[in-house]
Image (cartoon, rainbow, N blue to C red; front, side):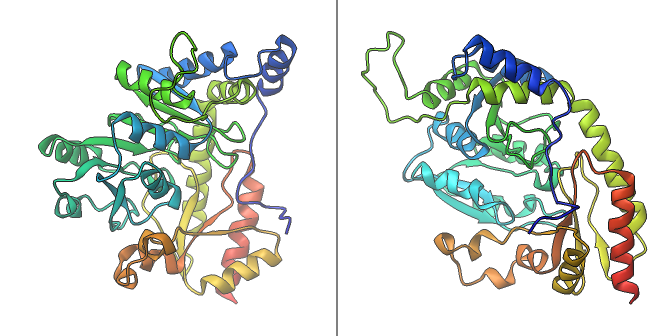
Length: 351
């Protein structure tokens, strides 16, 4: 179904076409194109981080980060219950085991419940900045220090949030704050980790390109065409984030007094505007009839078939998943668009 007011839409109004055209005309369209390095540098600089390693998706970014840290079979990684399943899959791809921790009231991992899940096999804590809310990174990095663990931040939904862990991983999928259509990037201040991730993403070729590969690696490379689009997006990131702050403000003001709607805590950056709604499925059907798209919250990881645990109905993550949804949230959403969405929600609950 096509919606007049979609949940997400990429905003390609900068120099994307110019940079992409130059890349095609130069013939440097593969991962060797110089624009890939330009994007890595620009993205790292924006986040005040020393090194950027571009790759093919946010999921592959997480996989590279875990592999670079030596995560493998027999290891455990702390992962939030409330997240997109790709966070857990990245752990599974390495042969390690994801160990799930329930969320707090802000949907982020409940830091008070992490320590009880740490064992002698735990190697990494993976906080996820849900919908653009920064996790309590001071508490998480303190725990990691106490137990000699590493921290991999899943920042897929948090462009603009400065990393504080060992590696931060971002997605550039079409619905993210900035996009390359597909793509990802890892940020770290550790040059050895950056080199290892770059090595792993490119099939672990030796420097002499001898076709002797000493470890199992991946083809997780970003093309220059993707990097051209991503670079143009980074150049506008300040404006994009400011526009999204205004979108958040207008929704907050317009929906604060609507009976049946519960607003969620503020976000550090706005990826999606999330809320809780009574009679959620009826509301979604009504809004769809007005050509307004909505999406559901993530399901708990312990409800997923590959990670199933029978206690999933008792989780706070499940409670949020039962009545949560998010509204159209993208940089090209106009005040008039938002006014219409807000008006239709108010009309539903006043009927």
